[in-house]
Length: 148
Image (tube, rainbow, N blue to C red; front, side, top):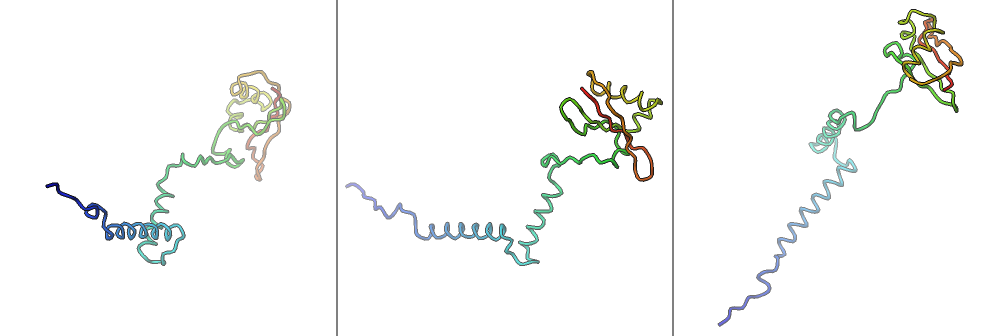
């Protein structure tokens, strides 16, 4: 005779469903408390969140944040170079480090066009050259207005 199977033999048990609900609600509770920082100070969960934040701060690569410091006039003592400060139509203003100018052993009016020619590699006309002084009357650089 054919053997019959009962439908209730293959149905998941009520106990298995309640276990899954308990695990799901436990995970939801942990995530909610972590997001809203609801753990008591001094508990191991609180300490774990603090360690995770500190690990992120100190171990994440700097390239993720595209954080580039801006060049300040005080930085010119530590970095040598030419910085483009702004453009208005065909006029461009550059900040040229005084050490570059001094390295050519010429007057600034003669040295700056030589330096800019190497940097720009195109035709230009120097309109003005102004010295940038610090509070101790030391020349940090020169602002140069150039017409391209």
